[in-house]
Structures are given as structure tokens and as C-alpha cells.
Length: 333
Image 1: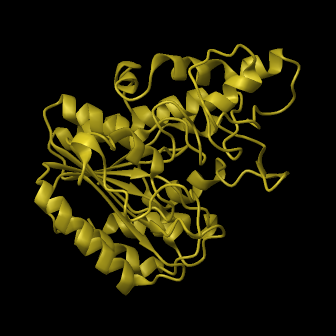
Image 2: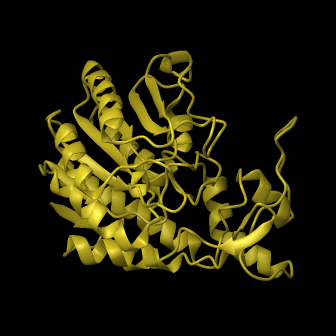
């Protein structure tokens, strides 16, 4: 399988995140990729597709914010990484705030997604990595893997969150649509892909399915409930399959079968997998009980759909086992 990675993705290196009223070491850190790279072997550098594919998903104002936020934070006399701390969640109306503190709240929804000095550069190349892996699939490869870091499935069109800044899977989906493909996205990270869902929720041309921890108990809490099925033109084109803490392979396989049945009904000619290895039993911030040996079986079930498939990396925080879990999943294809 062709795998894509760019070393500039290491440049996003936040020192900490603000959680439960305290600063904690960042869970999504550059060290995650070392385990993966050691396990998957050779990778290819992505091609630079420019900003145009990003702009199919994210407005220019949001991209400009990501580029300048850290510089503006420091120019305001602040130390460390730029961390939002106030959010316009009630009676939000269109504003163009000038102070960086306000713009951080305007373009984000949580405090766990700090903007460091090189966050934009790393996020940009994560998106280019997804686009280059997509090129391989569009060029005839059955499956390709995009090692994207930072991940992308929690951020929306105009907001960051959940360690995510640019929506790598959505950017790839839009590029595939522009190339004439019909796209389905299947998110199998432990946490619901709320940002990806939000981007396509009112559209009927992209099917989105997510298998994840029940948001009654787990982040992101406010999205991913089973009754969220889309709206407007997108009604019925979103499928959420929340599962209980402690889920093991048999229960996960039932949900995966349901998701793939719905994918088949939608009849795409390209499948994008948002893959999170935080479903692993030893993940420090998650609570499913999948084992390393389970991942090839899940991948074989996905591959049995017979669709050209782009695998985009999302979460996974059990660093010592992360590479083995990623390699195991890819081996099933």
C-alpha cells in the first residue's frame, strides 16, 4: 500500500492543552508519528496542491486566522501557545473582532486545541498528504494511506477543536467530488467525527457514517447521537452508531456491518475512512476494548465492499502500541 507523510507535520508542537481548569501536557504530540512510521515502513512525500482544495471546505477568513493566530497572540504580549478561553455560544451573531482572544473563541469550540508557532504549516501539509494519497487512489491504487497529523475530523468549516484544525477527510472528499467521484466517508475513531458531519450535514451528495463512543458519556458530547441523520438535502445521508464504553470486537462488527450496508445503498465509487486507533483497549483517553489482532479483521470487512479506499489517520494515543495498531489495520486491505 502506498503511504504518504510529510516531515513538516511534526512542526505542530503545542506544549500543553487547557483541560478541567488546568494545563496538561498535550495528548496529540509529534511523538505519535514515530511509532507509526517505524511500523509502516517507507512513505512518499505529498505534492503541494496549494490552498484551492482547502478553500472548497474552509473559508478564506478561517485559513487567514490559522496562519496569523500565534503571531497575533505573541504580538498581544501573551506567552506560550494561543489557547481560546471564551466562546460565543449564546446569541452568537456575525462579528469581526480584532482582539486575538476574541478571534480564538470565534474560530474554535474547545480549549484542547492550542495554536502553536507552526500549527498552520503542519496542518497545511497534513491536508496535502490526504490530497496526495487521494491522487494515488484516483490514479488506480485500490487503497492508499494518508498519515495526517494533526488530525482533522473534529474541526468544521470555520472552527477548530479536538486537536483538529483542517478537515483532511472533507478536503479529500471535495477534491474527489471535483474529480467526478461519488463519495462516502466512514469514521471509525473512538470519538465522533463531529466536524466532518457538520460540513456535509445538509448535503445529499456525501454519505457520512460514524461508529464511536456514545456522546452521552464521551467527547464531543453535543454531536454524534443516533437521531442525527442529516437535514434538508442531507436528510437520511448521515448515520451515527454510538456504542457503549467497553465495546469489544463483536459489537463493533455489528455496527460496522450496518454502516457498510448503508454505504452500499448510497452506492459511492470512493470510500474515505477516518481511522482512529483510539478504539484500542490500552488507549489512555478512550474506553473501547479492541485488540491489535482485531484491526485486520475490521479492515478486511471494509475492503470486502470492493471500493477504492483512502485511509486518513485521525486519533490514537497509546503511543507504544500505535504503530502496531495502524500497521495491523492497513494489513487487512
